Length: 136
Image 1: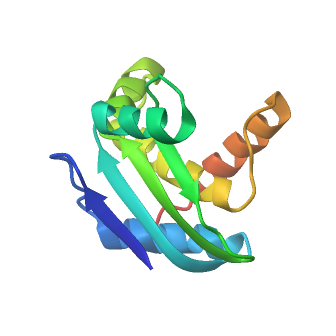
Image 2: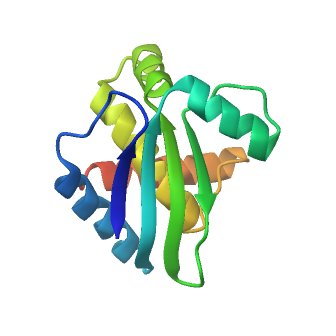
Image 3: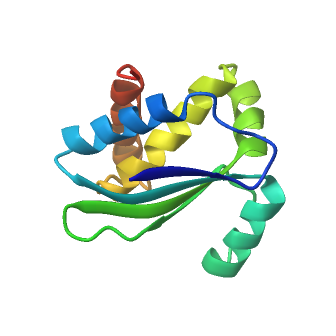
């Protein structure tokens, strides 16, 4: 089950469509959908998590906590709406396009994709682009 939680004024207009899309990603990657929580927040909220759990004193657009068990995807995906907006401006893309990229990015990590090396980052970006093209 995919759920959406809001710790900021932002809210998705199309929760069911996004939920169906994320379910499609999980299925195509040959995983099963467990409990996935998206938590939309602001920079301060995410910075506190970054400091507390990762010991990083930096702003980021996403932090994901992976509780996947075998082939069943479970996790919490925290997304800073402020960072996504700023990144969309920096990359000269629409906010919703950047948000979709960040949302699928978290799930792709749960499916085993990494982005630490250049090769891993390239593969992650290809996967993101592929699934963004499939938004229902």
